[in-house]
Length: 511
Ligand code: MSP
Image 1 (spheres, rainbow, N blue to C red):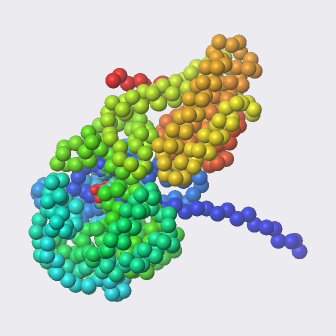
Image 2: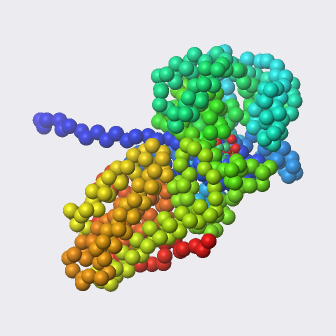
Image 3: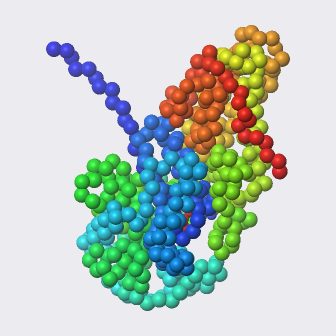
């Protein structure tokens, strides 16, 4: 009998990432696109790493705001949602967003999941009937303390007085459980300042929150009392487990495969995500999310975009000027995940010309031109001992770490250092001046190899451009099929491939 052979065990990491689901009372703007792009680039990176990835986005279609937007347009809420949801889907198609699923809260599977979660919390004794008397912000879909009404109104929020019978989620019972869960999971909210903020809210004392309304009809009925519909935030948060398979029997394996997931959110909704949501899950006997990444706001002229400020910018308007990858590159490279960023057309233009038209565009066209002239259009192999090899290794390590930590701006800053180092290497050796021969071949082979590594590192941010670079330097197949870290090792460009010049990657734009 043959001795048993050791079995190689490949551990595939799972990565389930979600964006907030966007309200359909509004058209998509660059703030929505910013979140969705960060998620897209992050999941593209994880796919390059070979992870088992599930990227979810979608729309939040219930609640008063949608009901009112529909009424104002003379259609039913579902007709309104059907119409607006297409604008989100079109925007994500335009921006090359590779989400695996798109969830709508009006889908039957979501009604099932919301009912199951409510029922589980109710049976745990954490949902009880009470009366709400006070103020409600229609703009934020939340109750407002009397002392905060003026502040809300000063920000243009629509706040009305109301009294109604509600079911309440007994959040006040969860202070200790949440604190002890967070103590056991110390590094799950990024950046740490947002974790401290969430912990501050929990330590400051938690108020029960209402999970039902009788004053509106557009929502999921409370399963044990259909005269109430579910409060939009309870309904909306549940989308993350609906899409993972929670609710209907027979999907337990799928749910165990994906949950707990990772949430990407704007700072405006961290209280709902980092305080309410884990408490709801704990009540139902489910695990809280794996972790949260919280980004800041994209401001326009120093202000948050809003319908009332009339300062919303549609992604398509910028794509018309800068192209899809010009758009993607700007928001990923220039708006770090964490702090607020102020959008400026001038800054976007300057960065486009400097980084895309000049640095990357020139490098590719210069290398292709010189390979055409000096090497008959056939790309030579790189030098194993090239001085660029060490630079490339350090940059690949830094960019990989930044992608892993959901810091696209740092990953791209590192990647562009490699582009600059390669341009400098060419300028130092001036292969366009020397006679054809091994010395020229070495320098051009190094530049082609650097371009190959740049294509892999930049592909999560600018997938179309990365593929064009890949093809122009003669590499077969798709850059998305590469696997890191192997594809980042120096020496992968084989040489002997046809290099083509093609049209400028990013035509220079006039200010
Ligand atoms: N429907 C809720 C979320 C429910 S999630 C269970 C909602 N929707 S929203 O349409 O208002 O979108 C909020 C999210 O959009 C923010 O958290 C953020 O991700 C993104 N942004 C909207 N405006 C933004 C900026 N101006 N800047 C950055 N992100 C912005 O809240």
